Length: 176
Image (cartoon, rainbow, N blue to C red; front, side, top):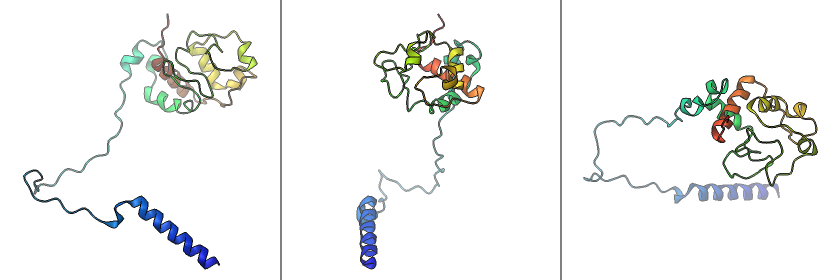
């Protein structure tokens, strides 16, 4: 019985690999030597893999107050990956596990329509500023006990500064 199960598994695996491989093992015919497809005697330079270019954030961050003006955009973008499963940044973006963050600065905490906040947030009179967000991100549970956010926090101050600058740049921040 074990031999039968092993053989059936091996056969199914082989069929699956063949189906996923496509082409059934056939190799394409070599290209013909034509005017449209000439053969060169020169060796082509090896292609280098495309790497994301460093983003020049000087323009987008120039209007931000210090220390955010000097923050590393790419570091902020990387750090925001911790947030993106729960929050969106786009204007009109959806609420996920957490509220959409577009226009967060200058807004009363707990004010995003369509999002259900904890009683602690509903009872708070906090208005979001970059400095308040820095305190929140250090430890959401300690900053406002009783909130629903289960995130432990962003430990490194430079990561907090960078992610706040990134959020500012991506959400239409204005200090007016």
